Image (cartoon, rainbow, N blue to C red; front, top):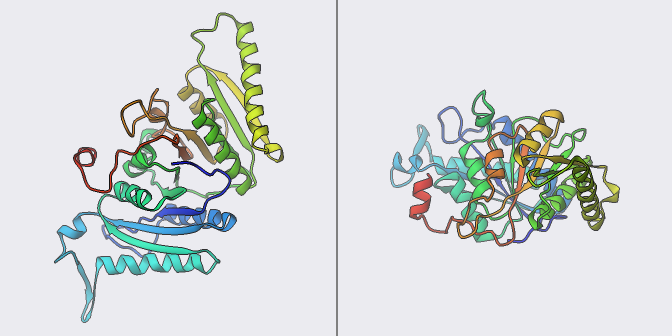
Length: 321
């Protein structure tokens, strides 16, 4: 699926209405509100359509009568599905009042798989979801739904962390590996920097195992920085406040070290499919990084990426559930 970095026409927003043991809560979590606000901001600046989706878990069917779990008192009974549709419709209508074309839908299934199926059916430019901080350890930052979307969704996926989004004072980091998917990440990073009126940092890490001298390292660093400046120039990014840094060593370590040293609101990076295996990464850089990133992440797939998810439930999905 190709990426149009400078504009979006259709954005899918994954909304989580589950809270306090209830399948549907009218009190949205902070991270869900942040993801919605981010989507509204992008839709307004890009004149894009927003589609809000909530996926009720399979238990909602298993515990219901004929797929309809009744709730309420007296004569005011309605199903969990109806309640979810009503809440999601209210969210969509509030966004529509800001001049945005909106729609909403509630489905049953596994959240990550049904979000991807919606993308497969209706060609979205971007998926936005929120993630909860699941524990005190960095490896618990991204939940399984966010990780599976980042790994397997064919279009770009923005997983927004808890906290304020669109912090204009904080830069966007693009991890550029100098491949075509890295160039797509840079294009998307520049578009986001313009949208949020913030600076952009571009990072590339060079493996040092084949370098024979410090002098050669410095020459290579100059060459790579020049290449990145050329990519920025081809994107007409002269209006952006751009910082380029070239490091040496493992890319995953370089990115984490950079994030430790700088406050960044969003990391944009490419993912690369391993030859012959849909939905997996080569080099494991993205696979290693995703659970550890302390900021929001926007993952971009190569144009020939094939999602392992199909429109029908299959054995592959059951194994990964």
